[in-house]
Length: 202
Image 1 (cartoon, one colour):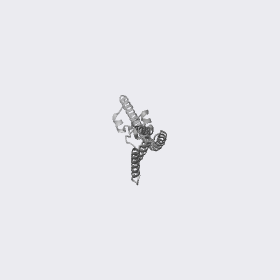
Image 2 (image 1 turned 90 degrees about the horizontal axis):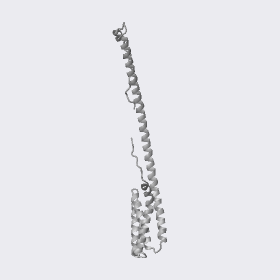
Image 3 (image 1 turned 120 degrees about the vertical axis):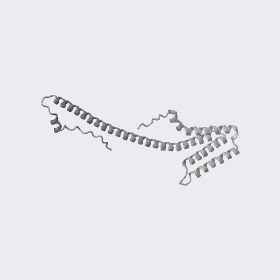
Image 4 (image 1 turned 60 degrees about the horizontal axis):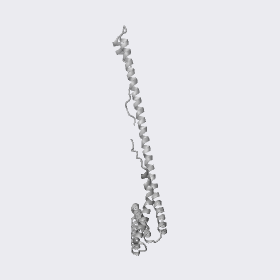
């Protein structure tokens, strides 16, 4: 069975690795733009971001609670909470040092969480490749067995046809000799041709 081979481009391979840094960098840039447009030392804007970040964290906690918790939803909520907190600090702070520190911390956490997902994905891909390799080997073995069986049957049929042709030539040559009695040959019986086994083994 021929499996399709998908060649991933370099961009498709690099993009997931750069996504956490791009996300946190975008939040930092947006927070600094917000800072330049009046959010610096704005208590109302800071309170809004605190409420939103706390709400997202609470939603993540509820989503992960219990045995039936949804890990993907919880991770999304916690990521949103961290992003809102980073954007709020970047917008409220007057200097760049604290936002940069939080950006570095958020990026490190994002890569830590993404690395876990990448390891799981890699293990699944390796297991899938191993399964496909085993199936290819089994299929190739079955094809080799069938080819050997077909070759043996063709060889037996070829030998039988050659034997029948040789026997017919011998009988034709014998018939022109003096004293040939076809009834005597019929009474003696002709030698049997080799049997061709067409049964398939499973």
